Image (cartoon, rainbow, N blue to C red; front, side, top):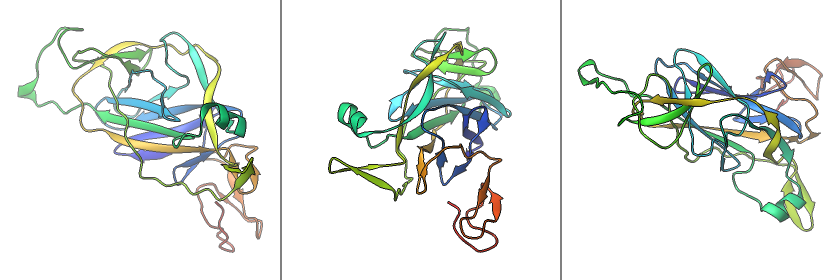
Length: 259
């Protein structure tokens, strides 16, 4: 779970929330995954999402309702009716030769901004879909997506992208054709079909945005991940065999690092 400014983002695989350690989530290559958002603020949040440097919402923004409302993003949103799920695969030399080796591969970038607080004497009345802040799209519940246009709202929100100061150090590497490829590195591609649907909504002016970065990893120093590390997973110490919760970094018995 990554929490920032009353906003939560987690990665889910096989219906289970995956454990995040130092902004890194591990899951098996070939897995389809989703991203779950939770808005703990009392105002709507607008969210933009990019994966591997690609805008997976296609110039739209999600609107997450306030007061602990959740939304699970299951697919690329090139259109509102259906699309492909997120699938994490290993980045091989053949893939690098074809599409290139990108600096933001394996990174999920989530930019969110809350709707501005409204002072009572500043409230303006506006009819739907006319001269207002921004038009959005929304799923039958509490999920919305924003597109170009202007509107003052009673439901959705927007988002932007930025940069991350997080550094991810990977020790395991594999040499192929005189190049080094991180053996835990992967990319997100289009997976199976999803019928998750969206529709347009609207939202008011936004405050300054914040950014959450999650790195997906499909390898560890011990080899490929065969089973996702969830929030309920227990880690076994390689030195003494003691089992610990997955959020524990060092063995309570002998002090060995569990990461």
